[in-house]
Amino acid sequence: MVQTVLGPVPVDELGITLMHEHLLIGWPGWEYDAAAPRASLSELVTICTERMLEIKALGVRTLVDPCPMDLGRDVELMARVSQASGVHIVCATGLYKEDQGSPAYFKFRARFADVTSEIRDAFVLELTEGIGSSGVKPGLIKAATGAHQVTPYEEMALRAAAQAACATGVPITTHTEEGTMGREQLDIFAAEGVDLRHVVIGHSCGSADLRYHVELLDRGCLLGFDRFGLEILQPDRLRLAALIGLLGVGFAKQIVLSHDSVWCWRGRPLPLPETMLPHWKPTHLFTNILPRLRDAGVSEDKIETMLVANPRRFFS
Image (cartoon, rainbow, N blue to C red; front, top):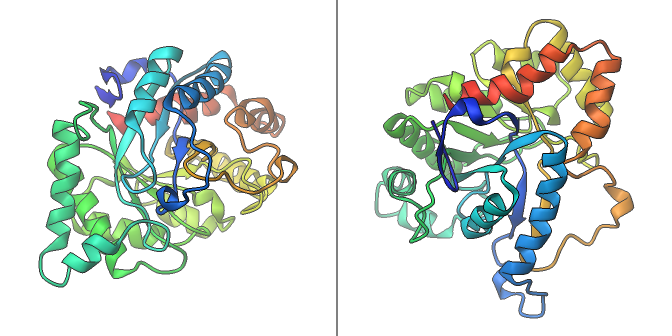
């Protein structure tokens, strides 16, 4: 079984799964932008349900929204969209990377207390009893690091995530920047006893370095090629080149796919013209990326493995 926002679901019912998308994001501090627009919950539900029905028509049956605690997570929104669309949604507990998350509280407490255990207990509480008074339980744990280093705060959060995973059996998905720090994330998880077969090193497509990818894959984890369409960070042609290469040498059983798209924003949306990111939407994989994989000779079996079998195994 896997916990969804509407309750536990057998893993065999997950079907085609997008492993990293966001219905709603709010950078910490959004609530202080008093002049920013404020959409109602019903307006957000309408926007997200329409988008969810678009990908449902393309075969998607499950969506993972790994929004951590401190990035505007709204599980009531997720539950209402799942109910309205009939698509399973899996939410997360966890904390974001230091430079864009909300580290001040636990960094302050770290002067006086064992904060790793406090963060672990917070994760375990949500996993076992639910998020706040919502009754919604997360189905995975989110951990994150910035580019080229793991800060002391991020290490505490990573160790807490690992300890919570070991205590509950819930898998971990991560955020990485610029295709870095996947090795270090795995080192921390392994030191805490995590089964690396139930870890996704997210945004690994931010690197086109196959040595980096293979080194991680050889340790048994999954890689997230999960930012298709986000071309201001990495061109899709490099993501595709790396993905096709890895599939060609036998790693289809260790890769999951997605876009890291954001459908709604708390506060002001990103001030970017739509022409700058025309494909950063959750239909892009099906309308543009999978056809290019097929043209490159990637079999339907390998595509189904990445979209169906690997998410199912990750949550099993």
